[in-house]
Image (cartoon, rainbow, N blue to C red; front, top):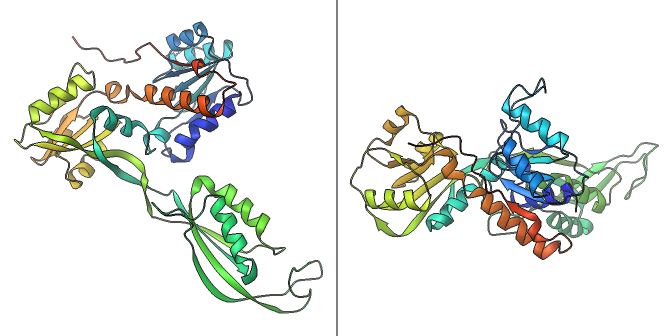
Length: 371
């Protein structure tokens, strides 16, 4: 089992292209071809984390937060980041980060919060744009079905609860091959008209390489004409935050007490009570003040997130209860999510790599303490 094998599994859950443009995800330290002795899963990678990996014979750390966020111009041990990277390199330990790729996954950070809180009927709070693309190609009528099926198999044509989706227009294609051509239909040097089907399919950008490969492999023409365009369509199953419902409504104070106990936090900062029952709950792990308007628009009764500033609480405007449970606390169950996911994967698909070699970090990396 190599690092690449393991990160391929992780990227089925949290494809790297789901990450926000400002982020730094993927393999930050190490080589993809290294054979893995064990995996330590953590929220943050600190020196103590590297020591824990060494003690557990784990040469791969899977971390939620990236230890390298902005560029390193020097590596001489003058910061905690450099200390961690140097120690990892000296001990042949690789570091991989998921961060906003997992934030945007439908089964990621916010989904885990929803599960812990027992929320039902969950949906993405802020569906992500820029993920859906469209391919249009032109195929001789007799070959259209074969090409279409190959595109579907490669991951094209999925829309929500439907697959094998395409749009097809019958028309005429014209071309003339030069002296170096080898036309499948027609003769070189002569104008040719062919009955063709214009096939259009949408797809997730993560599947683009496989779809283009399938197109070239199954299209009969020597030169394949096609266009790929990015769309502004949102993906209803990918994005930041989630919203769902409690099984039964609570009053505001009762909900905050439930939240404090369930999310294992020593402090819940909240906006003023507006004396409404809590049923519809929006959540977002980590710093989530940017999504307050989205939670209000979605008609949530409460929005649970972290890192709200003083003026953010005014944005409640008597329409929603805002609850800040702390950055670490909102993401603390993420490492459990990753351990459970990898353990199940290895049990089902990689029996030669014992699931017990996936280790949950026992150390708290929370830098904030309460008196």
